[in-house]
Image 1 (tube, each protein chain N blue to C red):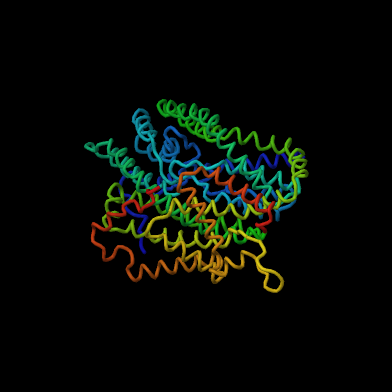
Image 2 (cartoon, rainbow over the protein chains, first blue to last red):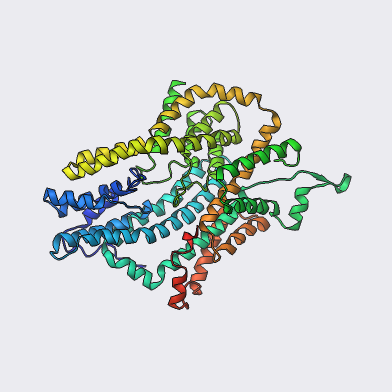
Length: 277
Length: 261
């Protein structure tokens, strides 16, 4: 794979300017608010670029206001629209006939698809893998658990955040059209969601426990209900529990209510003696 | 106790700096739990309680309109009060989850309006070209949103320990066992919430592959992650994705099916 991410700085902006955008993209979600979401964070990251492109104070204020409108994107790939916006701001500053409204248009158009990919990959795949690795160790009291959790998530996170800055700038406003047309985006998302799904399945089995301790039979042939259920196929009680909870969520039941139901079920089960550890 | 309270305050502050530090998951229970444990002199317990909370709250992420409970106050207070009271991970859960839910409401209801004042100040700063004021107001806005959590954590820790110890002392044995059992049941909810955001017809079978590989063969999650990545790479090699599909078919799952929910 060859991204050739450091090229084409023939106009105003240099690699150094984009590096500033990368660093300043880190607190992007700090000022995330319900009114305009990531607007302030986005503008904060864009500031060095805008300052360089618009030496005139009024132009700068106008450009900053342009970026203070609603914006929302998965933070880990926020540098991608920032790179694109930088390329477009550069065009706006250097070309007379450039329509500055198109900057906001392109940014807005990217919000949906980018967040879709970003949320799916980061929340659904990478985080699940990191949590899986981390929790397996941490449940045994191993300090490597939290450390590996952070590393497994953040190493790919920062590499991609970095690459996205330059990729976004380089591809400019054409990028999404190109990638979508090639079908690459769907493939990547599908592959990522398959990995995520398998890991969720594995974690459900490994980390959920339900144990029906009711005694069945007497003497030599005594066994627990759990053994009988697992005799049908291993993991049946866990899968049933998962299925019931999944169904309750599907019925739009509040997760908090489900939590309470599980708590009551656990306590009643322990009280009546049909559930054990 | 004063020193501990200050350190607990700092851990809370670190948690609420999550978004200033690149949303790097410093706020997750699996990370904050061990830190609380370290401060209170029982790191081992902190790690295990953190992981237990992490599993129960694995579905708690801000996707779309869903607003997750405030994991930071839930973890710091749940774990610290449980360790102080000499209780187990199940106590951290039973204490942490209600705290997290209440703090979400408090931060949203009382913190957001304060934050918005400063977001609007940022507009004015930009207009006046005052970048220093802009940076300052952005910095303040982020912490103001969570100011109640930042203040409540050390206060509740300082004043709450004794009360929690007493309450846990009078709870009957079977309720404590029941809480233990519930701690093991709760991950099912976390995974179900997560699965809901990811599930569609195309990927549903893979959930069961992952599940039964563990059920029958006892593979660990890490093992399944490795095999699933290999599997996907093999599928790419054999052109399972998009290769021979007409353009129309590709459009059909535009948005990847993640928008379904």
